[in-house]
Length: 314
Image (cartoon, rainbow, N blue to C red; front, side):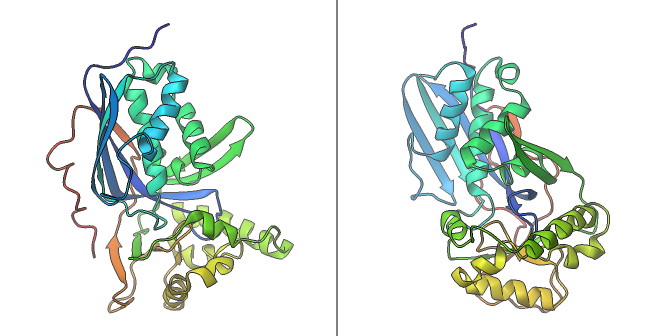
């Protein structure tokens, strides 16, 4: 059956995410209420990408843009490439900070491509979207909460990435501490050893299981549930200010962890009154985003074009 494209634009809203959440390395993730908005439409020729907000002037305006890369991969599965594409990206998720900017771009691209094909949802269902997004990203821990929303547990089978989304307990109120400095996931992964002690692996398995219970039913257990020995200590030398802030918050009784590969710090509850992380950190209160990515017809509206995330700063 031939592939046909829609005649008008489609738009998608994708949330920021935090992965690992302490002990849940490459498995656990959380969607946060900070969003990128992206609109796309099929054009007669060429690829044009306009970026406003985070990454403006740095991200490529052509086929090299990650949203377009993901769209191309999805179009291959959908049966045809369009003659041209025009994209408008309003980015609010900081680039290379451990808040899932690349996963947001990938999920946006796959969903936009599906939305631009008239029977895209039948050709590429939600499970296939997750598999493709995880394949492009390399692992499903960030793309899963971006796509599904809430608190997710993700894993990889021979057929690809899978995930479930779980509701988050009312007492969970995330705060993120975002530095100006960027981090690189590849560099952070390079700091990890090839093997870890059996005792550390066993500890993380137990704390990951406890974290599922803490996030969904017992927030009072978040501090012990977020103990990690698999990745944060190994990465501490490469981002000492992040490690120091995590330690300071935890000493104050706040369940704090490195967000993804860092350097952002995620706290599951608000810090104590008067807590001052220093001028190098921006502090944002970001509620859990329960809905995940959303797709709609039409161009971006006035509010969606605003590159400032209203209310994100505490």
